[in-house]
Length: 129
Image (cartoon, rainbow, N blue to C red; front, side, top):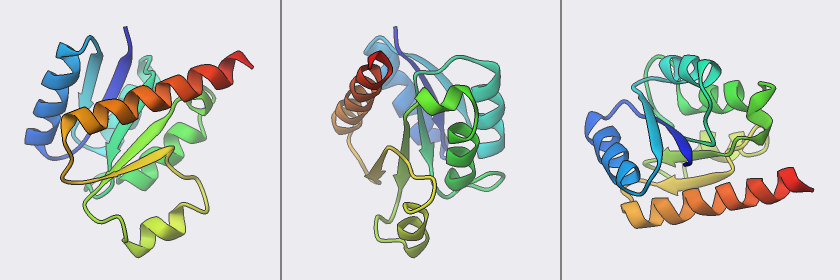
């Protein structure tokens, strides 16, 4: 069973992602802020992190930093959800610690599922080599 950490301050998105991925056999942990999400990341086991970019109390950039700079996070893919793929800060950030994939909101669940499964497969291959 794949374990997902879903971080977003929009309760509707969290509810939809949780229901969809639970029905697909995932174990989903949710958080409503970056700070809460990083605490749950550090205290649990997650195969993939999906995080919103723009949140109060710890944005997506801080989540990516927290995951990627942690010992266990180097093998954990992060998918960033953003309302604007052309946001200047996002373009600059990609040259530093970048998400493994980025998806623009609004999105459909099957597209997010394909992306999640693809990064999980990519990372599984990397850890075997």
